[in-house]
Length: 146
Image (tube, rainbow, N blue to C red; front, side):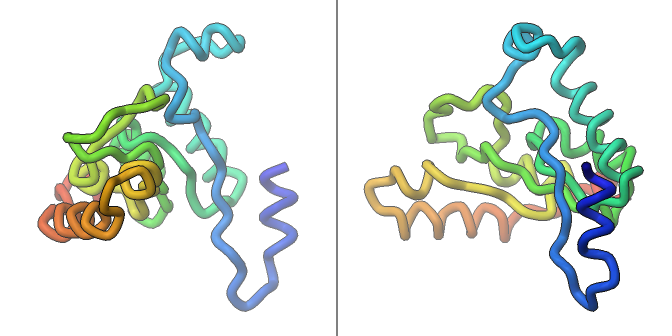
């Protein structure tokens, strides 16, 4: 399936980036076991990322808790999109494996997905600005960008 997607966009001058989803950030180890997936979310996410890379995809959607390990295994050009990002002061809601914006950036995330911390905020604009400020002040860890 992943190779078919890659084949479908190859030959275009500038096709879309193809991303695979690893493990949903709302799933923890017990939840994975309930659906028949053995091992830790971190181990499975890295293995799925390596599979996506070998299929020719551009990157993955993965928890920030796995971003550093994925970066180390898949290299600096492999895109990592991190959902489930929560500022330290915000509730987790249904998310099990989260990082703060700065933690995700330090782990090597290329893009962050921040939903409810902004849309559910009393002042969404202020919430978005605070997150942008946190991101802007976060240096990437040298190990994260190999």
